[in-house]
Each structure stands twice: as C-alpha cells, then as structure tokens.
Image (cartoon, rainbow, N blue to C red; front, side, top):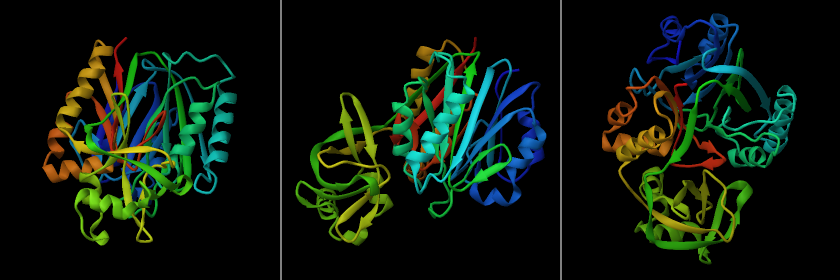
Length: 370
C-alpha cells in the first residue's frame, strides 16, 4: 500500500488513524507535543493497530505533508510491502547511566536479531531518545558495536524549550527517561544523510579546558570561554548571550568538507559555555556562517534523488535552532513545502542522531520504490 502519513494540529486521533490506516501495518512512527501526554496517544495507536510496532517521541514542533505545526501530532505507517521484519527495544535510566542503558538495549536487540549477519543495505535502524540525556554517549555505544553493522538515524525528544520533560514511546509505554531502538529489515531501498547550511568562517580557536561529560567548555585559547566567545561575536555583556546570539553565531568542528555544529545552550558560572553536545579539550572550533537553509533543504532532496530513482517518503529530524532560524526568516512554510510532494513526517529535536549526536542539522531518512 505504500507509505501513509497524517498530521493534526489538535488532538483528533480518529482522523489521524484514518489517514495512516492500511492493510498489514508493520510499523507506526509518530511525534507529538509533550502536552498531549495526558491523552495517551501511544495507547490509542496501539489499540488501533495491535499488530504493529508503534514508536514515538515528543517534539517541539512537527513537519508533515499536511503542513507544519507548532503543536500537534504527526504519524507515518509502513506496511508489509515495505518492511519484512521488525525488532525493537526500550530501555530506561539513560539520564543516570547512558552507557549502561545503551549496552542493555544493544544486547537485547542482538538477541532478538538472533545474532545474524546484517547487511546494512537491507536493515535500517531508528533511534529515539530522551532529549535531556547524553545522546553522544548512546550513539558512541551504537557505533562501536560490531554486531550491529547498520545505520541508526533519529532524534532526541523535545518539549517546548522548557527542558523539563521529554518522552519516547514503545507501544503502550511512554518514558521520560528512555531510549528506543527500532530495527527494520526493509523491502524497499532507503537513503540517509545529515545536512548543514553552515560554513566555516575565518576565525578558529582551540578548546583548552573542558568537562566533556558535563558538556561544558571552560577555556578557549587559554581564556574564559564565555568572555572569549562574547568578544569574538561583538557582545559586550555576558548576560546578553542567549539563544539568538548562539543560533546566529554557532561554533563547529570542520572535517574535510563536512561541518559538525556544536550548539551552545548557556553561560555557566559567568565563565564557561554549556553545549548541547560534548567537546573535548584540544578540539579546534570554527566560528560558522549561516547559509541558505531553504537551499539546504533542496540539496537534501537532490542528494536523496541521486541515490534513489524514485522517492516515496521521508522522515525528518530537524534541530530546534533551525526552527528558530526558520521562524526569524518567516520561512516555516517554505521549508515544509520543499518536501510536501512526498508522504513525510518530521519533528523538531534537541539533537539529531547519525553515527554521532549532531546539533543544528537536518538529518533525514528517504524511502525509495522497489
């Protein structure tokens, strides 16, 4: 039956279920505003499709063929024509011990997979995790696991930027401290990548003191990090450093032609910078320049089309900083419209996952036809 999607800007679950219903559903993936927890969307989806594996995450805002939404719920279904087998696990306690939780999830998945040899051209992994945990630690464990030789793509769950509670779900369970790993043996081709519209500027610097585990950079080029950054971007007072300054003047790691943004959260103790991703001492950072975010979306489609002869759907994981930029540019609709010819859903995340934990990127999965 193909890929079916639906989206609602209010809690119209009956309408959403009709949009994604199809025979022989194997998987349902959904994203929802955290305030909808009280409606128990996970239970409604599982009741409607008891034969399917249902996985989801809370979002800051949603993307869908039906249009972008500040609040609401979006969902996508895959049937037996697209997916042959499904394997899934949910583990909790990732805030306190992300390494232990990741290893437990990996061990369970390996057991469910029967320790088979995996062809990464056939198997697709999706990872959804608590957005207030250390996603980079979880992704490191996945990337180091030799017996899970497949890509894991996904996002960190979000709330309305209160940073108080984010949720991930598996079937009838929602967790505020969880990790979901979903593995699908696909019958259709797929493609994944991450896209960055930021380019390196002329300024570069070295992190000279950091607490990687806490995601805090204390010194840059031997000076207090917050003061160094403020001087670099022309801000006279540290109390003026905030989301808008950080979003407009991001820092990043450059590797060849690839940029890995390292987004900042806040000033710590008047001297340090708290990041959304860990940074180690000795890392060279570049001050990045913003490019064209709509052209970047167009590039994502062209990139996927060069690998898949015919696109039939997509899932997008788009950073909250990119959402802020799209709002400032009044280009929310323009971004969503780039993909609306496809059945697609997406959500605004607190971090994007592909081999590692990313910031300020669009990470995407594209589905082709047989």
